Amino acid sequence: MLGKTAGSLFWMARYLERSENTARLIDAGFHIALTRSATAPAEWKSVLETAGVANAYIAANADFTSAHVVDFLLRDPANPSSILSIVKQARDNARTARTYLTREVWEAVNTGWMTLVALLKRPVREDDLPDVLATIRRQNGQVRGALTGTMLRGDGFHFAQLGTFLERADNTARILDVKYYLLLPSVAHIGSSIDNVQWETILRSVSAHRAYRWLYGAEISALKIAEFLILYAQMPRSLAFCCERMAEHLGQIQHIYAEETEAGRMAAALCRERLAGPIQSIFDGGLHEYLRGFLTANAALARQVERDYRFVE
Image (cartoon, rainbow, N blue to C red; front, side):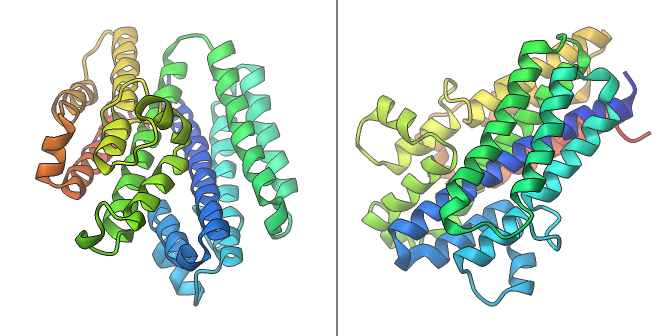
């Protein structure tokens, strides 16, 4: 497979995953704005921080009102990281790699794009927001279903899956870091009701609230939630799960090309060195420092994949 095609599949999957992650963040912020209006501006600011667009938003807006933040994240043409912009980029990458996609995958991506254009012709009303966000998640789910249900398990499939889990790991680490390190007012609040609200928001942001309750019961504990989202390998948005999948798909690509790569070694090292646990040792060394280190290593892995497989010729 040409490096450009591999890169298109990789980035198609990354952009689609990013759009869903942004939709989940908006949903969590909206939930807080409705139920805890006093903390809504801080929550919306943290959503923008997590999405990496806080500076761009602040440059164009004076406050953190729900309507402004939601419009900026969903459809603002001045925001290249809006959901509308990144789904367009996903579709453009899918079109570049069209001959390597099944008809079902291409139609799912293309239909998702056209549906989104229709939904976001104008600012979304507050009453309509939950349905719009659910549609974005549902369209992405249809692409994932078409990928896993119709694609040959060749290199194209593995590049797409690699992009998905690399992006998902980045998102989970950013949510943990931003919510806990930037939004929590001070160390004095750790264990307080304010702290517990932030941890519940983290779970909602990754659609893990109910799964956490099944595993740990009603107790909201920073240590347990961090363990769940970092080390619990059965949780599909945990760092451990994502790292295992990245190493697995890189291993399959190496097997197909009969060549070991630096990216494959880096993925194995990421699983081995960053996810050995236990969670208490991560907290003892500083959760923020740990997450920043993980994000740096994950970004380095993405760059190495691009070099090893010549995404840019």
